[in-house]
Length: 100
Image (cartoon, rainbow, N blue to C red; front, side):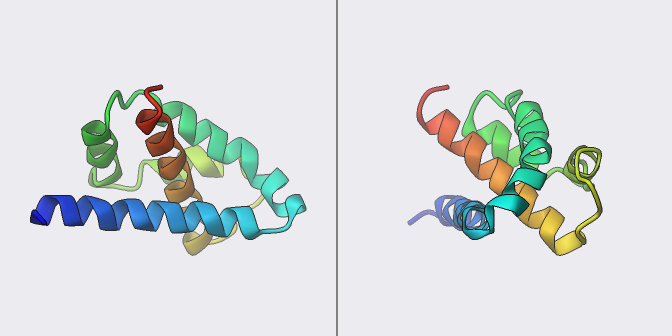
């Protein structure tokens, strides 16, 4: 397997695991963070393909956090914010895989 493909597979695995972890959270928690994840997903829809999505993910700086934090009732901490970011990236990846 080409190194780039393996790197992308590993990145997608991180995104998928974050999404699955979010899905296992209590419904009340998911309801609190849904608006934030949706807001980031809306920004990610500017990525027209997987190359752009990965480029956005690895862009220097932490641009997704402020998008999420504007829509969260409180700051849940950096680990949770990162998990929400990854979950949003996974959702966009799925949309792209479906041709949307």
